[in-house]
Length: 260
Image (cartoon, rainbow, N blue to C red; front, side, top):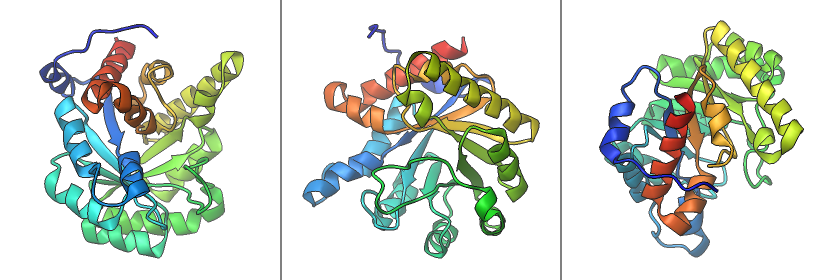
C-alpha cells in the first residue's frame, strides 16, 4: 500500500467547512466490542470518540443493538454529554429503540436491519416490506428534531421506497463492493454511483458505509453526490497498528484526494 504523508489536524478541520468537503463519521462500535470481550471499562469508546474528534472526524456513529453486544445505553448517554460532535445513532426500528432515540435526541438516527445472530449488519433494509412502519418511525423521529437516514441497498427501487417514508437521508450499503474484486467490484461500484444519483434527484442526501477501507474508499468518496461516509471497523483495526488518530488522518486525506 502506498505511503502517504499525514496532514496537520488544523488543515483537516478547515477543510470541513469547504463546500465540496466530504464528511467522515467514525463508528466506535468495535472499541466497545473490545472492552466487552474482557469486561470492565477499558478501552473506553467515549475516549475513542474524543480522539476521533481531535483527529478531524466530522461525526460519531454508534449502533445500539437489542442485545447490547458492543455499545451500551450508558455509552450513548456519555457520548451525548461529553463529545461535541453530531452523534449518528444506528438502530433498528423497534419500540425500545425509538423510545431511546426520542429520549436522548441524537443529531441523527440511521435505521438499519438487525438480526441477533449476525456478526455485523448484513445488508440494507427491505423498505418496501415495512414501509408503513418505517414511515411512522420516521415521522416520530423527525417530529423530535432528529435527522433520519435509512440504510439501504444501492438500487433505485430501494431509493424510491426510502423517499416515500419521508426520511431526509439514505446511506448506501457498500459491503458488496468492498468484498468484490476486479470487474465485479466495478459493477457494484456502478450500482452505488447510480443509486447516489437517483437519491439526489429525489431530494435525498446521500451517505455510504460498510466495509470501506484505505484501499476501497476513494472511488466512493469521489462521487460528487456523497456527503458523508461512515467508517468503523477498518479504522479501529488499523488503529491497532498505527493508532486511531493516525488512521483517521490518513482516511481523511484519502477522502480529500478523491474529491480533488
